[in-house]
Image (tube, rainbow over all chains, first blue to last red; front, side):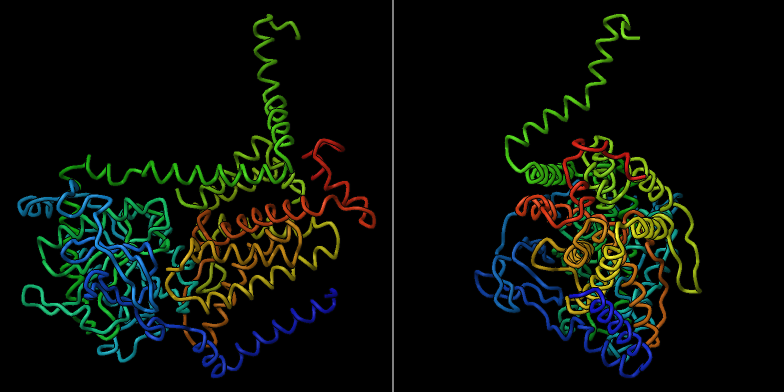
Length: 381
Length: 228
């Protein structure tokens, strides 16, 4: 294509975009066509390979290798996909399961003491898909200006503030509701971390039938909460431990509140911190008020977690430690890519060897000369 | 250690060891300029954001400095043709990225090791290299694709009558702007090396200047010095 042709194509694209921006109704329809919401995609059903019993329904796209720890702490792994059915196998856990956790946990007594504690960590709350809303309460499943999920965030923020936490709740919806949202919310997550927030929650709602999340906890109507941990980052182990600890506390304090922990593919900005998870609070057809009840109870869980951290700081330090295995993996990957690149750049193994030996001879020549000079009483100077 | 940090550290080490010489030469940067830009990005990420409009602002480390680098590279591009190619590459990757982010599922649970953060970078890198055929164009396309995408989404929101705040490059060195530019550059270097290795050196019919620039560093002029 000639340069003039290219310019013409570019010009045409710019005009096209401008036209869409101008005709708002046409633009709205066009963008609606593009915005594939979860509900339009349908949802996935996890089924046990052994007996076909249902394990989980979620609008998150599942893949072989995804992990799920259910309410009863059974550990499953997706082994096969058949359209929207994810067949899972119960496996032994690779890490500690809830019963074996030696993390920041505490008794009720410690919990009471925690109320008087000063210097609680700051908590950040944000919403990658801030347009998500609850149909029965909000009238629709998506509100561009900010959906009902923001109010659920407000409730959690208020509950935590009442317990003495410093909370930063960002009500930015990160619209449009598309795959680029995580890239935009990454900026919010990074900002929260720069401000000093040590615990970060990205609050969402799922898009499955309401029964999946309906629950009654201590006589109160709530929606269950699903904890989602991304497995594609170096903090995956730490965030998984964080989720496991929250679940164990919730299982004791408010049984039924936490639905489970989904280890899904993706990053979810969790590479930025070791105490950051994604919460799915109910689904689009649940009542928003039930979701608000759920997060009010979840605030208790966070408080006990923090009190436990203060009671056993060593354990928390361990959970915050950068996982050596993950870092090694990253370095090995980098080294492999670099080696492959150098091999390609050299063209042949001989040339590669020659270049490497040349490189070390040349780059460290000064060092050798320096040693020689040193030994020789600086003869050269 | 998040991905932006790993990439910048890796690149700094490569530059310090003199291993990134050829890439930098092709970018028209010297070691010192490159390290200066990296330092500015690291420091700039911690500086306050500059407001542009009521709902739009720009981060210094993650937005302003990468854009400045793009402008610098654009100005330093060898020929007018390369400049046109770089601009086309940037627009093409921005449009492709925008469409792909609309078509792809909402949640980043894709089948292979591609998170939106890397997906955008890969698209920009491949589109940038295909359209631009140079490392410079790839970097320009990588950074430009994300910045333009931010602008496209502003237009979209305006059309839909919605409102949202945006900080271009708001996550500093962890932002997609920089990560995308660097991955695009790395990808172009890798593809470029393979293609050039398969195709051999440019022969007759290519400008002498280009052939000179592609020769082994150290075999002709002193590497790293001619960029300034």
